[in-house]
Amino acid sequence: ETGVTQTPRHLVMGMTNKKSLKCEQHLGHNAMYWYKQSAKKPLELMFVYSLEERVENNSVPSRFSPECPNSSHLFLHLHTLQPEDSALYLCASSRATGSPADTQYFGPGTRLTVL
Amino acid sequence: GQNIDQPTEMTATEGAIVQINCTYQTSGFNGLFWYQQHAGEAPTFLSYNVLDGLEEKGRFSSFLSRSKGYSYLLLKELQMKDSASYLCAVVDSNYQLIWGAGTKLIIKP
Image 1 (cartoon, each protein chain N blue to C red):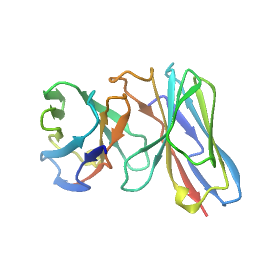
Image 2 (tube, rainbow over the protein chains, first blue to last red; image 1 turned 120 degrees about the vertical axis):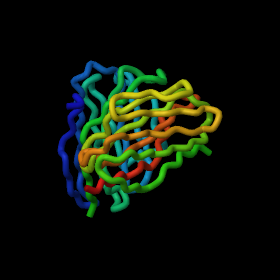
Image 3 (tube, rainbow over the protein chains, first blue to last red; image 1 turned 60 degrees about the vertical axis):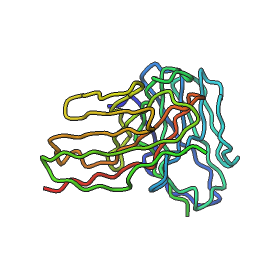
Image 4 (cartoon, rainbow over the protein chains, first blue to last red; image 1 turned 120 degrees about the horizontal axis):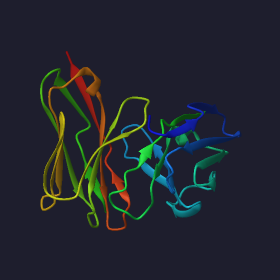
């Protein structure tokens, strides 16, 4: 077990729906991440939080809205998505940001399909 | 730009040895990670190299040459459960992880 859980594991939504992805880490880490993983493409970093403060936002469209209420929980709120947003969304955590050897621990991901 | 190159797919036989290569061109270098990802599952940490040379962990070894911008993951005594994707990621000068697209390894009996 990686200590990082994600719900739901699968999600199908229409372009006009609003849904949220949830991530929880049980490792006592201070940093959390959202990644998008598309087939045969590198992981794309979307958002980084350190001690509940957003420290990185890699030009992600505003239809993706993150929320980090505490260091153990991370949400990704979705609204008016496009079919090209269909992908595996991975959450990860690490002890901190800015340390090169800090290993990121991943959750199993949410497989999102936008119709 | 920053770039990580890995083969898209490799096939190997159970019990054999396979080497998965990763070459990188990044703005700075602060280490290289290898992760394993089984289909539909979380990527899991395999190794971290920051100095040149070979590091061995059981059946898996990881090699780094910083001057050549090159790493490889060596898997010995392959088992069917080693069928997975193997992701290479480099820590750049801003301590960001730059990811390769992954190598899908297929093990045949």
